[in-house]
Each structure stands twice: as structure tokens, then as C-alpha cells.
Length: 548
Image 1 (tube, rainbow, N blue to C red):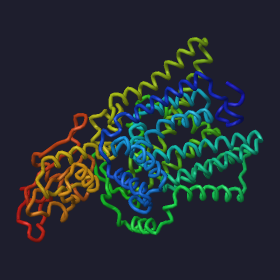
Image 2: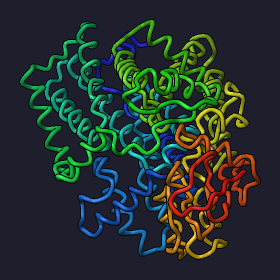
Image 3: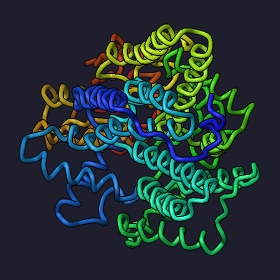
Image 4: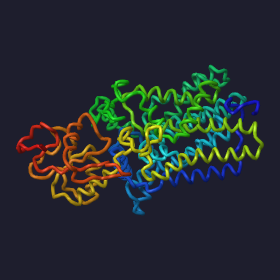
């Protein structure tokens, strides 16, 4: 081992060798192939529809319409792909998901660079191998949500902090200041991707913890203000819709709860309140611990835990950066009553980096005891085992990568028990609406949990005659003249609809969509005047009929 270990964050990192660059290029290609494969295999999720509609407004020059609850950066990227893809007949789902899929593939290089800076080249390469093919990372980076971008900029922020600290250790003042500016830009990118300002303290925790450990890196108050100003200016340049009155009005209605549609989540066989204000009384604090344990390949989670144990024990400068990232992330998200699987995308690379770190420590011991040739074979063998553990799961589950549950969680048979809302993400819903559109009478009613995708896919099928309602007591199936098609989705079980779902389960579905052997969407056809909720009183003019 060198006198100065990589974890001490001193000096410049060694450049990648030509064989290493070739390996990284192959990993990027593999990551892109997995993320881009059959990108439109699943229909839009509820949130994705808003991104698609926003991009269509953006391309027409309207920036204050749909989706103002989220920053602009991702929607601008989608708009760029829309400008290209509409000329080639690309599917709407493909266009909307392409930015995340491509960014996710190339983020393998960022993982490699961050791993090299924190733990050395071997650890960086191992982490890159995992990042390229990690089935859960691949699956959630194919969803058109802001978490992929957030995770990218969060990794860049950690990289900038590590490099700035290393430059300060060596007295490279100009490089230190340059990395500080890049860190400010990364912070701006984070907040222009998603309004998760509560993750900004990661930078402060890492800085003050490094200082407490004896780092000479010092940022005066005036410099902090300058960096914050730079971040704010960059943020304004790519997120100007934040200053629109329509955004303020939406923010006010969101804070007051007027935008809440469902407010609960099915997790591990039970429904929980899933709103921020419920805190620890909402979706349980251990949600993300369970997610990590059952959604990564077994060897990946074991090596991650080993790397985490070493980091907690030694707490060297590199450890402090990654521990600051994980500590703030888990603290904030665990205390919040609102939890979603896709949020984990922005901390998952930390687990892969720790797994790569543990693998590199194991190989360091092997190299110290074995001849060079045998040590080389051990390196290749360990890399292959880690890589193929995730890659085999990804290939066998493609294109429904998110439906993976590892052996610790009992395997895929439990996919409908752990995180069905997050993992299915409305898969199968598009096909159900298409079937209704092909078989339902004129003017029928469709009652769902996601009325926007329902209306979009009905229109795409040429059916603008349908009435679309939410499956809620007093709202669903109010027509007395036409049939009502109630769509029940696995995972979208809430306090608000559980009575209807239980009531409908007593009859045979009119249509069922299945994915990987599981019923994911059931359609129930109700005659005019029938109501999905037991004991529900009919509305004015509605005949006294019920499912019983």
C-alpha cells in the first residue's frame, strides 16, 4: 500500500490507463443498452404524462403550463428529444424517457471517477461495473422522473468536494477554488433538477466534518456567499419558470394539501399515510433500509455493507464525504412521512461505491499474499462475479427491471408485497385502456386512479367520447345510461379506494393485464347505475343498484 492511501484525499489521482478506458467504454455501452432496450415497453406512469405534456408546451414556447411543481431542466432535455424524435416517429414514452436513460448510462463514468478519487482506481472500476448493470439503478433510470439528474449532480458535488479538499491538502490554491466553483455549479444542477433543498446540507456536513478531521481546506464566509451567488445565478438561468406567478400559485396550493390525490402508499402488505407532514407516523422510517436490502443483488448488498462498516470504523476523509452523503439523505428521507422507491436513485450510487471499495480492499489483501498472476486472476474473477450478479438479474428481467426482488426478500414472488406502487409504476395500464378503447361502447365511463394517463391513451386510441373519473366514493360510476369500466392496479391501493377494491375483488374481472405472471391491472365492467363502493348511495337520478 502507498504511504498515502486514496482515502486520505491527497494529491492528484492517477489517470486511467488505455485498457481501463476501454473497459469503461464497454461498461458505458452495456449500461446504455440495458437502459435503452425497449424503452417504451411500459406505458406512461401518472407523473410521466405531465413531463410529456410540459415538453409539448415548451416546444410551443409556453413555459408556465403543466408540471410547474418541478424544475425545468429535465423538461428542457425532453423538449430537445421531442424536437428530434417527432420527425422520426419515436414513441412518446421513448422520447420522454430518453434523457434519463442516456444520462444514466453515461453516469457510469462519474461513478468511476468518484470511486477513483475516493478509494482508488480499482474501487472506481468495480463501482463502475456495478453502476452499469445494477438492475434497480437501470430500472429506475428508465423512468421519466427527476431523481436520475439529482443523483448525477449529487455525485458531481461529492467529487468536487473531494478534489477541493485534496487540492487544499497540497496547497494547490487555484485548483481548490476552481473545484469550489464547480461544486457550486453542481449544487445549482441538483436544485434545477429537483426542489430537494434539504439535500444541500450534505455539502456543509462534509465540509465541517473534513475540517474537524484536520483538513486545511478553509472557505471563508465571504467565499461561501460568492459560491451561493454563483449557484443561484446558474439555477436561475436554467429554471426561470420558478419566478412565474403560476408556479407560486401551485406551490401555495401544494403546501396547503390541495394537490394531494392519493395520500397513502401500499408497502409490505399494508397501507400507510404517505404525506410529508405525517413524519415517522407515515410510511415507516425503515422503508429505504428494506429497499436497499431486497432490491440489490445479494453480493452487491453484502459488499456494500462491508464497505460501509470500514468507512464507519476508519472515518478517513474519503469516508467522511460518502458518509455525509448517506447520513443526510437517510436522515431527511427517513423522517419524512412521504417515501417513494424512485427517490433511492440519488443515494444508490453510494452503495455501489462502497461495494467497489470493499472489493478493492479484499483484492489488496490477495495481492499482498499471492503471486502477481494469481492476484490478476482473482481480480478478474471477483469483478466478473459482482458484474454478472447484477447483469444476470437485469437481462432476465428486461425490460421490466424494477420487478426484481432478491433472495433476501424472498424472490420475485414478493414483488407485489414490497413496493408494488413504485416498482410497477403503472405498467400495464396503457394496454388496459387500449383494450377498453377497442371494446367499450360510445360514451362509456372509465374510472381509474390516474385519470390523466387514462384520457391520454384513450385519445391516442381515437376515443374522445369516454368520461374519465377518479375511483372515489361519490365520484366513480355516476352514469345511469352507460357502462362504467373500473380499472384496479396492483400497488395503487389506498385508504381512499380500498373498500371499492375489496368489493370488486368478489367478482370476475372483465379484463386482466399480466406482467411476468402477475395480475397487474384488472378491469371490471359495471352496468349502468352500478356502484363500486359497498353501501354507497346513488347520486341524483342514479338507480338503486349495487354490485351485490
